[in-house]
Amino acid sequence: MKKVKKFFSVIILISGFLFANVGSSFAAAWVNFPTSWDIGQAFAISLTSNADYSNPVVTWMNRSINLNVEQGGAGKISYGLLGSDVRNTKPGLYDILFEFIQDGKKYKASGKINLLARQYPQEKLTVSPKMVNPPKKELNRIRNESKAVGAALRTMTVPRRWTTPPDSPLPTITLTSHYGFQRIYNGVPRNGHNGADIRAATGTPVRAPFAGTVVLTGFHYYAGGSVYIDSGNGVITAFFHLSEINVKKGDKISKGQVVAKSGSTGRVTGPHLHYSLILGGQFVDPIPLLSTSITQMLKKGTQSQVNSL
Image 1 (cartoon, rainbow, N blue to C red):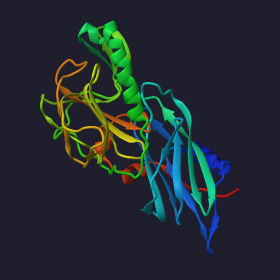
Image 2: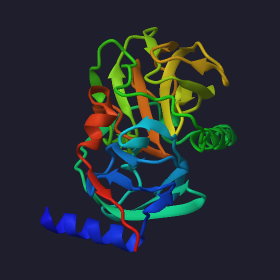
Image 3: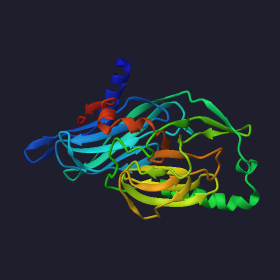
Image 4: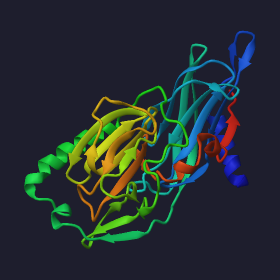
């Protein structure tokens, strides 16, 4: 642990930051993020200052994420939720960059997060053969749906409409398939499961974990009935295999609002709810966040004041 802390402080000093003169006092700034974290798990970051600043952006996994400036901490604070996708992330050090404007100047601070391997088990499933190797006539549909989903996941808005802990999408959470499971369909290996499957009879009301705006709905080849909700700062939730969709693109959603009903549409072995949490384009495990808050998560990070060179 001592080695990690030393490395972190060196990164901060090399990055440089500020003691920008604002009036007669100095403006100090701090960043908070974990020095190491498990692949596939969500983590919290923050930027704080005792003076006003604007346009805060955090860059992680080659994605720039716009943050809010809110009252809190030593004066002003920006919160963020980030993570890494179990499907395409390898263990190792990854860059994180904070940027903002203060007193008419642009400032940056960078560091590294050591992403650690996490063991996720395999899961063997039997589905209709056409759901493993789709007919040629469906390929154009699948490509178009993939493009629409990609555009939805690139949504980047402010202000922050997510608050923690999120509401549970169902009254009871009984997992039938965990995040990260490597799916083997009819003997054919596929990528790790990018969400959590929750037991739910067809027709069970599904509630939005966060307030937000619906950015995509539809009945897709693999995911079946689908709803994607943008809650700001790169935070998007998605539900799959729905039997009924009660919202449309552009609808403003309140936290806890019923948006759909669970079902067994798309590539499934039976009725359930697939729940995904996407942070800055990265699919992460949505379940741990149901029982924690941004404040509790930040306690697991390292906060450092960043000094000018």
